Length: 417
Image (cartoon, rainbow, N blue to C red):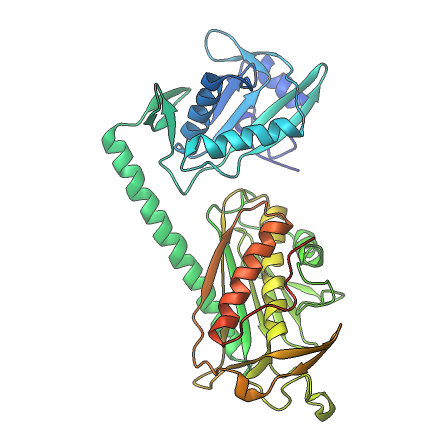
């Protein structure tokens, strides 16, 4: 994958995969350490507490200073300049160990660290990216369990003063307010567009704390890749969905790509260049055939079934996950969902009773609790959320929505085996 590191910038290169040629050129050019670049000859020793504390200090310093790269397997001369390649031993267990150190020895935990591995003779050179953190200031253990907040001062690591820590906390709270406001704006715009359908609709938006590093535009093929990845990330069976992406055209929006679907229900999925995603789905009006009235609220545009809410939430979480992972986002993602209508009409989610394995019957309307206005519900997940984490998020959101309508459990979102 094309990336832009401090090495690329120092060498005057555009974004490209990190490879051996770039490392050799950096050494030949004696590229010096900087605020966002740190050379390390060795990985932190697994059995050394001191090495673990030093690693935590380095990670916290980068996270507190706008993010950066720590490159393991490159030695330096006496002036902090790259001097030679010193291969390190690397496997998946090492990445797990370093992520665990970043999570367990940095306070609050540093999340989203990622690795670019360049194979070299005798081992590897490993470039670890520490993202800019919305949770700064981060602290690390220093001398007999005391906590200090490190930061980068050019190529050096120093500790923040009390006034600097105070400013960092103020910036953290300001970022949280901005993130919340941006979420509300995206949700409001998506909900207003959904209300035009004159049906009960599901609305879900997701926004990462740190925007995508790719910049302000993504191309059509990348957007198609994201939409095509939804089915593989679902918790429900792939055929239980409110998004059927086949040959439907993907069209450009404002720094975004839009997928519109008309059958069997109207749906609009959007991926944004900053890593945000939004989904709106018509949950009413799926069938007007009288012979389907035992399974669907025919002729009631403000009614839907409980399982349709689960499918919609599952699709939205899958869309959010596919978007941030494909675009290389490395920060926590906030997901917000609700059920909306065009006006003051009461919205009804109808429960269902299982008859046989795949046969359901619509419960009587008297068993449903009409809701004039659903409260939006939210949950957070990591950018690299696996199936178990996606299940937890989808389950939490779907239950919070269905509980508002008096429905107790889930039928389609089930724990992965």
